[in-house]
Length: 358
Ligand SMILES: Cc1cc2nc3c(=O)[nH]c(=O)nc-3n(C[C@H](O)[C@H](O)[C@H](O)COP(=O)(O)O)c2cc1C
Ligand SMILES: CCCCCCC(=O)C(=O)O
Image 1: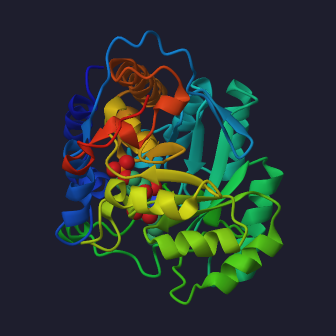
Image 2: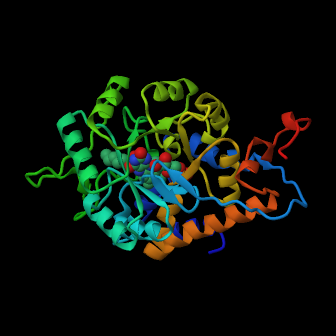
Image 3: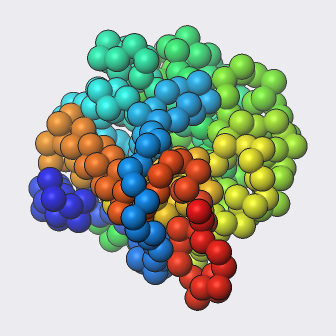
C-alpha cells in the first residue's frame, strides 16, 4: 500500500454505493467531516536536524492494554457491509499488530465471538466495547456483564449522540436497514429477538455515575469537545476521554478535533488519558496529534477501507502503514525520544519566536 487515499478510492469503488456513502459520509453538509481532514493539512511540523537517532519507543500502556504504537481502531458499525468476515477479520488483524480495537455496539458479530477470535491470535490483544447507554438500563447492564465476562479491557461510552445525526447521503440512498441476514449482534435478547439501538436523549452525568457504580472496567467517554467536560470527566473519576466529533457524523459545524485538542490537553493537565480521532490519515497526522497532547489516536474509516479491499490483511496493512509512517515522521522531525514529541514540533505563526523543544 502506498497511501490511505489510494486505499480509500479502491474501497469506494468496490462497495455498493449506499454502503460506500454510509461509511464515508458525514452529517448534513459534511462541514465537520471535511474540516477534520483539512485541519491536519493546515498544521505544519517544525523539524530539527543533526540530532542523531530516535532512541525511544512508541509503545504505550493504555489503561492496562499494551500497544506497540499509539494508534487504535475507533468503533465503527457494520463491518460485514465491508467484508463477509466483518469484525472477526478486523479483530484478528489488530490483535496481530499488538494494537487495540474498540468494538462498536453496532457490530455485526457478537462481542464474545470477537474477543475469542482476537485472544486466539494474541492473548494480549486489546479489545474494548463501545456502548450507547440504552434507555433500558437492565439491557445496558446485561451488555456490560457480557463485555466483562468476555474479557474486554475497557468500556467506551459514546456521549455525542443524544439523537442520531442527519445523514443526507443515507436519506438519499434510502439506507435505513441492514441487508437480510445481517444484524446488530450485540442487541440479541435472551429470547433470541434482536432489538434496535436506541439513543437516550436524557443522558446526563448521573448516568455516568451509575455506570461507574456498575462496572470495574475502565470507562472512556467518547465524543468530548469542550474543556469543561474534561474537568467533569476528571471529577467523575473516569480514566480516559476520546476527543471526537464522531468523524463529523453527528452535529455538523463543530470544530475539527485537532483544533480543540490543545485546549483540552491544557484542561486535562495529565490527569486523564486523552485519545483523539477524526481525520487521521497519515503518520504525520498521528505525530501532530501526539505533539499537541494526545496519548494515542484512533482511526475509523481507514480500517473500513482496509477491510473492504483485503479483509484481515487489508486492516493489518493499514496499521503497519501508519506505524511505519509515524516512525519515519518522528525521525524526520529530529525527535530523539518520546519527550521530544511536544507542542514545539508544531509550527504556527505565533510560536515563531518561541523556543522550540531541545
Ligand atoms: C461507518 C462509521 C461507523 C461508525 N460507528 C460508530 C459507532 O458505532 N459508535 C461510535 O461511537 N462511533 C462510531 N463512529 C465514529 C468513529 O468511532 C470515529 O469517531 C470516527 O470515525 C473518526 O473519524 P475518522 O473516520 O475520520 O477516523 C463511526 C464512524 C464511521 C465512519
Ligand atoms: C441505529 C444504529 C446505530 C449505529 C450507530 C453507528 C454510528 O454511530 C454511526 O456513526 O454510523
